[in-house]
Image (cartoon, rainbow, N blue to C red; front, side, top):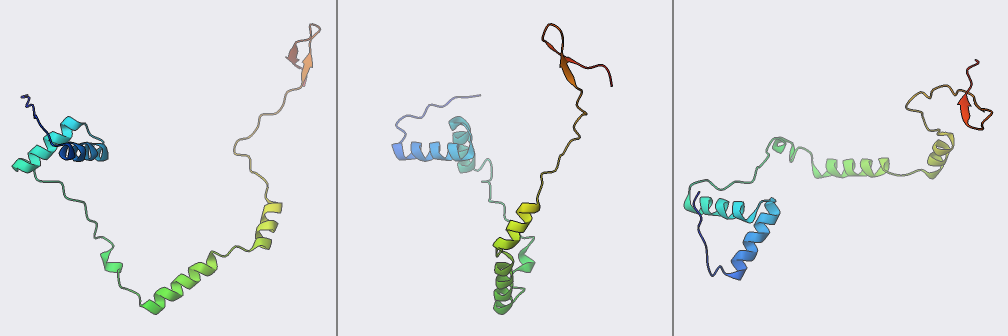
Length: 119
């Protein structure tokens, strides 16, 4: 690999290169190499990826239908306080794992806890 030193880099250019490196999460060195490759035509500039797979759905409904849909969504998003209170009062947390049966613990003559062996 060859090294090139660039002197008297304009501050504005240095700032823009640093911003680009930060945005792309790349080193300054990698960013400068990429810019030079693109500028010299060694590599084509990366184009923004454009998705068109949903284009066929645009314009499929009229303004009136869209307004009706928006109204229906607004109605469904309404919170009914009484319904929430009833639901909250009847809700109990669900155990996700079975708990092992508890084994009775007694104290030995020395005062340290021990599990009972009698069932």
